[in-house]
Length: 303
Image (cartoon, rainbow, N blue to C red; front, side, top):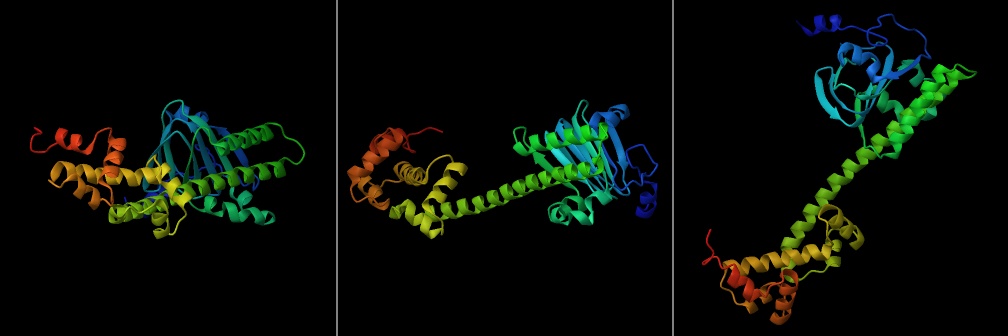
């Protein structure tokens, strides 16, 4: 079946299973994930919406998602954005908890709401899978806004159309904030990995010169506090501890695999006083250098 033929056979719905096209530009619909999926064996077959934008907000459970020719499995708390025209299908694990919010496209493109458009355009123009954690404040806010939308639809009152538009934008901007947080976290993680790699490179080059924390930070063009935070977050110890552990590692190597004297090892590691080196080594390992060498001699140790 060629691509053109396939595209003509994809069902187009307002809501899954309802083929009559709703022309109301202010149309807003909200329902539990289970409302339609449970009666279909928790399977929503691939389909698309002509002028409808959907948000699938999964609070707990697991779903296999299909977007056009791509698929992924999501578990936990996620929000999936589905722009008009995107072919999508879902297979949920039974009893998955969450909400599906369906919006008429004009609600997201109202010229009177241009100030908010900057924040939501990237959400409404492409599919997004936005992860939340259970304790995320933004997840709690999102759930509150969705409850307000559900209540507003159930109780028709003056200004309902405007109230729904405002609540929808609160939902969208909340999602944009979460997306920004996830992107920032990913960027920070990548930057941290690069900084950590640079620190380790400098450490291998200069630990024998007894560089101080400030010297490493200066060579990396960051502050001492930033370097300490990086080490604590990535390794779990202070920068000073990382430097000391690198010195101890090299000392252990020399004690086990060379015949260098303790004085020679101390000098090679930047210690002018071998006795001071011995005290440092014992403090770090609970063993004197000579004792460590004797207990770990590669010629007498059986493998």
